[in-house]
Length: 484
Image (cartoon, rainbow, N blue to C red):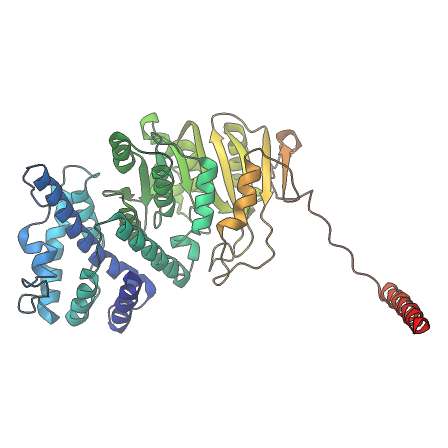
């Protein structure tokens, strides 16, 4: 039912003059979904308070509650068409009353880690792009049929929402900007293995895929006490995101996965001066796929000791700095980082090898990121001790990856198994730091264990083999004739 509802919503938005792409569909679906989710959350809280004999004060005032403006109901549960606004009246209410009211929560909230603050922030960043109030009414009616009350319902919703993000990533110029393949994320998390009580950070959060999957991984890691559940909810996951749309989607994605008030901040991570990062600002685990190929302006580069315009290299400096001593990281980066000959790349590789234990490099095939043709690697490292040995794994698949043939967890199963003991295989090998050129710190992926392809045979060899086979066939035939 949920999947068909999402398709119907997209069909309506496709007809609306204000929504021109998959990105708009996700954005507009997100704010309406969020308000429906909020209504269900309020109902759950009211029910819980009633069971405890307590009063519950709703977050949203009566006039602006979903059941008042979006889905007023008759006694039999049907929509009350006399009270449910549509057309210009509905758009006027949403744009000129509802939106300013919800934006005001950002100023009145007690702190940024509350659901109230997230409400204010979301509606400060977005606007209603649905131009037809009649289309808006149809979308609201469809989304009103969805429920977020049980874990199973939220899980199904989060799965469908992930699908929309994936489609949006495919629709954008850079598929990796919004969507990192989930099999890759879950594999990175298995290797880094975050534990309850540790803090997890993504400074390039995008749609918050790493944070969502880390939450799922840690939630399922053991039977949680009430205190541990609260730690996971409020004091474990932290993110920053520069782009408004990705920021909203990241928050919505985390909410659908079960984190009520995600600690994601809308900011440019790279605008932060590395010298200002103190011990209190650091995290135990960093999981990220920072944007690559971008260029940062000169004033942003001044925040970093190694000056470069390459966005991914600036992010890597930020991640190393913001990790606690002993902290662990799994970071996706372009494979050219391993061998670039510019001064900044060499200096950054040297810093990584000297200040961190770069224990594992996963080399991914082209096509891992749908819509992005670049080849990537994943760097796994621990901060606080120098690298002695680097274990490489080259993922070699017998098929080309793409939209219809994406990466799956089974593709990465051998990597996960071998990485535990840094075992050698046809696809894996280790190098000692002493073998790395100290001048260039080149870490190029050169697999010494890969079997050479058998050389092509010459025409003469093929002809001789054919002659030999003909002679053998003739002998067999003669033997059969003699028996007859």
